[in-house]
Length: 164
Image (cartoon, rainbow, N blue to C red; front, side):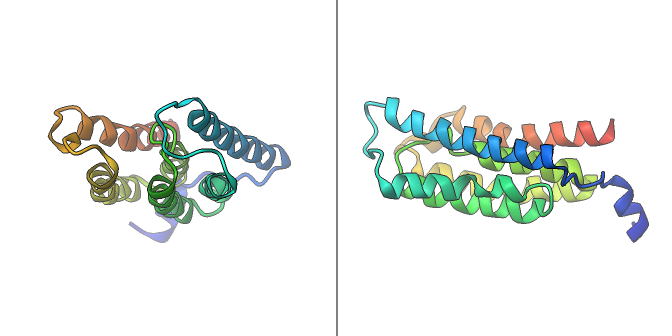
């Protein structure tokens, strides 16, 4: 694939003020969602404190760079997923930032990059399930496919929108 062919897939990166404003609102919405999840879960070991709020804010920051640096945003989101899950007892909403970053990567890159990113995300996803899941979580028949679907869905959606 030539360099000009690779850029043919990439739509113009929007730095329009509305797009930046949307990303800020999206980051705030993701942070609020995670905080609400932590607040409403009576079985959570973590309470809302300065550390948990700081980590959640850091976890949603990759959304702000997803248009300009989608690969860095996805890598940062996956890294912060581990940090947040190791410290804060919320598991349902933590992957949202990496899902948004994955969508952005698929939207702004070619098919090969999207496929490679999806394959590269399989080991960290399975490792997160093994590390942060309950003792028998790897032996449940639905846990791994469900979480891999959360990886694949935004990549597929971003690819579909790009190809459209």
